[in-house]
Image 1: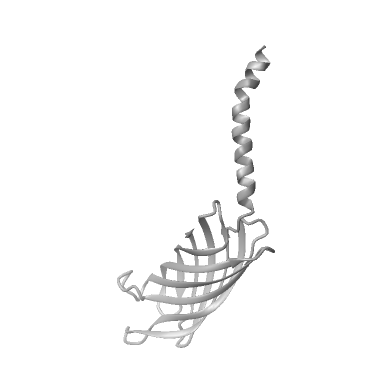
Image 2: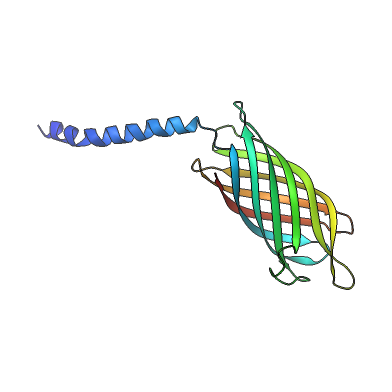
Length: 179
């Protein structure tokens, strides 16, 4: 009799958890790395033309995920910095602006390894401590993790190289939301 009582009480929980498991399996088939997304990354940057310090970037992008796990996308980035030669975070364009084409691979629809290359425009501090802009190329590599279909986490590294010795090496961690 005790066993039947325990089984009767446990049955609804077993059905609840089995339903959750089925729902989770179905969501695994959804393409998590597809669509429009935006977010923020915070990290540390080494500016060859003006010292080093904290940097923050805001990004907005779009991507397509194929059935074989390849992900193709494009992302726009606005980076601001707090380095020795700059007014900290007062001018939104102290740092860099980039447009990056990306390609990634997701073996399990939760984790994606990616790389990218694109155009960058970097602030340069000249001898008079005036800001100029230098155009160049940005390279990026990173990993993203999607705990849900609408929210993700990112670790990434970037190298910006431009004329006028305006190189930037930065690393950061961030979060993003899919729309």
